Image 1 (tube, rainbow over the protein chains, first blue to last red):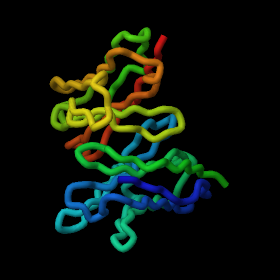
Image 2: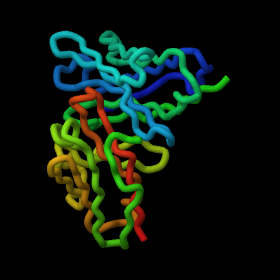
Image 3: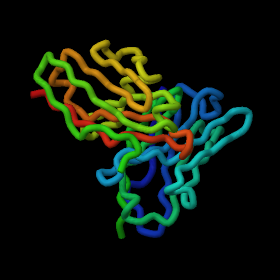
Amino acid sequence: VQLQQSGPGLVKPSQTLSLTCAISGDSVSSDSAAWNWIRQSPSRGLEWLGRTYYRSQWYKDYAVSVKSRISINPDTSKNQFSLQLTSVTPEDTAMYYCARDYESFDIWGQGTKVTVSS
Amino acid sequence: QSVLTQPPSVSAAPGQKVTISCSGTRTNIGTNFVSWYQQFPGTAPKLLIYDNNERPSGIPDRFSGSKSGTSATLGITGLQTGDEAEYYCGTWDSSLDVGVFGGGTKVTVL
């Protein structure tokens, strides 16, 4: 199983951060895995942002800290899932990872360094 | 300000043993399985231990995990220079309904 991340590394303040995580070797519609976004910064450490998963229907859970600004969406046609974070500020500058949760975060993407700056 | 508490650093000589503690609460470690991750600079975290004490295939048995109450421990025996890395504990918090991590522990081989 591999996760391949894509998306811009520079986002302007107040704009929307958008990242995609393409899955190979598993399915975004798996009924035993969840698909997560996690970020890491020196000031906040590892911070779980949210997840999407399928159990007869789609579910989404988000961290309270970003709940009003975040959206994680599956794309079954491309077997991938995406992260959108709106109204970003410099505090959203971090390394962003996608990760599969199969009893634990067992597979991680390579990471995308996102800088919020004008 | 991480939800789980880890010591910032531990160190030992090659061949020795280190243990890393991870302290939480009833609603996270006390209720859910704990995982441990190893991270080298510039790379993504890698799963080392899951379900408190299980090793994924390919992880040597020098690495071990345990849990008691609201605390968990990662042990590394036969310390090698290649073990110098940052180690994180993680679990789910059933009250906050979020994934939570420790602040990380830097292992130094003297």
